[in-house]
Image (tube, rainbow, N blue to C red; front, side):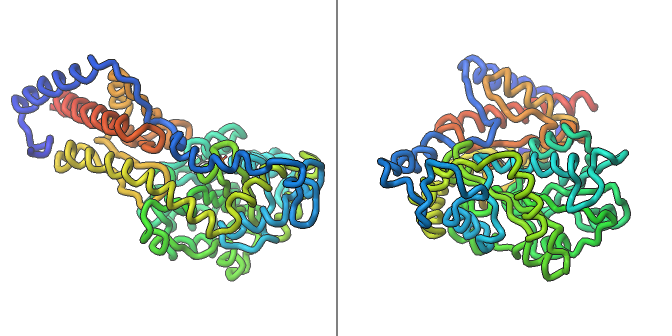
Length: 430
Ligand code: PMP
């Protein structure tokens, strides 16, 4: 098959009617498929089933230091749970404060605290005329939603396979004191699955911000979510805290992690990881916010996983479920769209998403077309601040939740929708 751009009008018209027939056949099946959100499948959740019943009686509720986890205490988390999450992130336990069930909430709190109380004594952002954040795009919609909610002006930063365009990041951060933060998903980025290069991590840690209260929001949500065993080594990147210390900027980063995509989504444990000075401010804030998070859940995680090795063994089982799903989508995309010049997609070695770039001006229509045939996709534009993809091109594919057979169908519906909309688009432009 030739690239669509090489077809003449008659060829495109013939192709369009053939695709329309194909599309109508699929539509007639009355499918109900969903590739919209990055949720684990039931099969993945079942892997951690034994965690649910791991605390069986009153003898099981004691932490290692004898603390009764049914009662108040340990406001920043059980020491053994802080160690477990520290091991996952590759930092020592004293760098770690545990939150509740959601790392996103810790990110929201961090922005909120900066607005109400400032960052380590600087002017609270609520008193400033303008606060800006750098947003690598395409990126995670909920990051952008947090900063939009607070009225932050968001600036798009193009992503490359090595991470954000660091020339632009360095320029904006060093020139503009209104730039207070950058959203980063350094490993298996949402939605591309890119891993920041060592150089990107080091340049990030060596930033020379105009604002003393500039912070890197290092959301390491997928730090251990490898689809392939070899990927673990390939995806190793320098520890951002260590790099910031080396660059004499120990306070410049907040790292966030959680077990949402390890144990239970929304039923896991989360952590914020940072310098002593930042952690002191966070502790003070938290002391007003809560008397403590759910220690029984922290204890369940420690008893179930036992150690980093336990977590890694569990993640291998997760990968065994996810790998065939990613591969199925990728091979259907390749078979149906390869060489047609109407879309590019990523082939991640980990994480939860595939990023698809359609021909400019087509993403919204593709999402609508797929929906009419019974396939729900993440809304076009969602991967950009304010929901505005300037090229109307990017679509996030979330292959984790459907079963393999549903996913195969879903990928086919998607591919036909892409082909049909691309043909219509080219015909309109003739
Ligand atoms: N960060 C990223 C990059 C994510 O993709 C997600 C979940 N989709 C989260 C954070 C949410 O994590 P949590 O459940 O810990 O709030």
